Length: 176
Image (tube, rainbow, N blue to C red; front, top):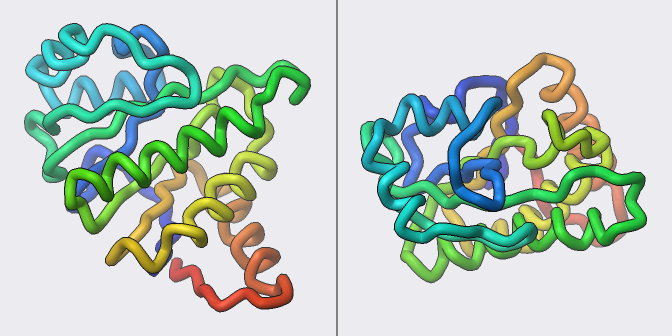
């Protein structure tokens, strides 16, 4: 099941949340900073031990003080007009996160809108990639949640899901 909702990813009671991290795993602003603040210092200790997360890849840590069991950290691409493999790298973030969650036996996962904040990725294009990959993995998870920070983001995700649902052969639904 795919669920789209507005909310705070740090408060989600799922097996794993995904963090829109930077390549140095150093914490930061936006969702990355919020997750690190809510999770507590132990997660940063684990990130420092890992050291690096190249763009388009994902790593996993414990979840510290969060309700989730784990955090997957993935470094999305900075938008440069689309000419530097940004769509492929963003897709890799989602695919890698799903594969890592599956490898760890995690059945419920929550994603933020990766790369759409300070990294400047166009929101509608990013939502299309996020949901398209989610649809590919939908049958391998009990629930896939997309957490939207703003009402605008929520509307974009809902509209995108409706559009994807209308495509020939589509057999998925989005709740929320």
